[in-house]
Image (cartoon, rainbow, N blue to C red; front, side, top):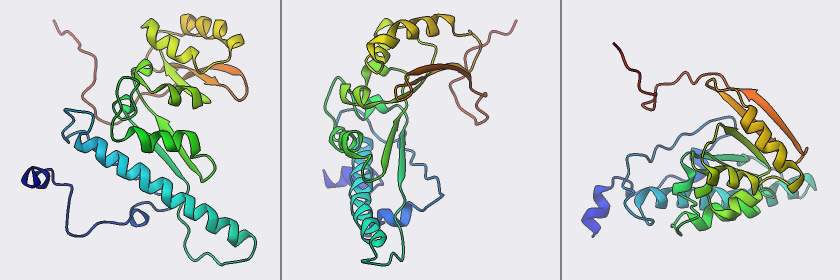
Length: 212
């Protein structure tokens, strides 16, 4: 089993402290797409769990230090930044269908991350597969066109009752061109229609085009 773990290529004799990875004003991308993901306790879920746990714990400590610094009790020499944790295909890491090793750490951020300064941004094409706690705690949604009733129902769980009819109307009236989306802002209790510019990076998810 240890030989199998060694083949994952994620362990070493010396670890990298999280505060050496996350710096103010810097975007870090962790690509776990090529790691094994055959079960809920897979390597990629483990890595996401470790990152989420360490980021949250570090920010809890940093928040206390910031409060002490404001009161003049200490002088901050270095500050661990507030973090936006953006997880693509997030239904794989905090799912409504199964408990994974990353479920607990991510739900901790979802429910308790605001006070220490950790924000969670889940990205998914299947909102109905997201854990109900994630849906319930969401206060801002950007949604492209949805067709599956289960996905639309998941968005309804975010909105207040008086806005649900407006959501149906907004989705039905959404333009069919690429990039059209609706923004659901639960704080201001409003819906917006927006146009997102085309993605300029390479990806393998282009729609098939027949050439004759």
